[in-house]
Image (cartoon, rainbow, N blue to C red; front, side):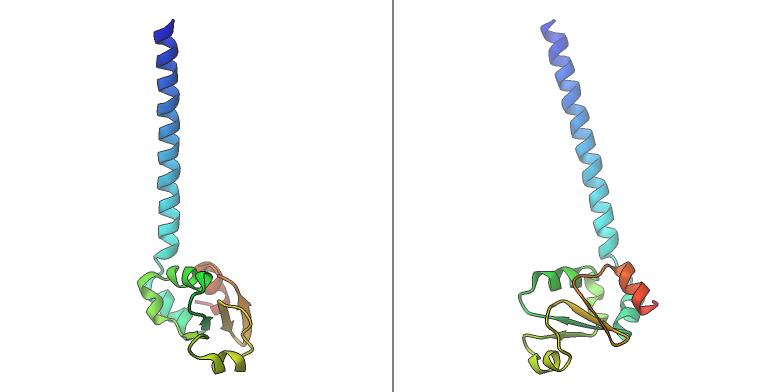
Length: 119
């Protein structure tokens, strides 16, 4: 009886471990997919928008990380260093995107940015 109980407990732990591993792999796959923005998409978004960020802003960093290495193709203004540009555009929060003269505050998904910029 004791052995059967122990075997049942082992099976439960193995099942839990397998479920956790599946969830971890799914999470990694989804977050990697979002961060792997193609060069072409990043260039298109960069040509049709302006991103206002600020040094030390964790949300700004998260926004930039969505583009991975292709962040270099975005048009970015850092309000810490270029205060006047941000004041002229009345940027009150970062990150802020300006697309077609409209302001969008907060971190935006790549899909949302593609929709707004028609990329």
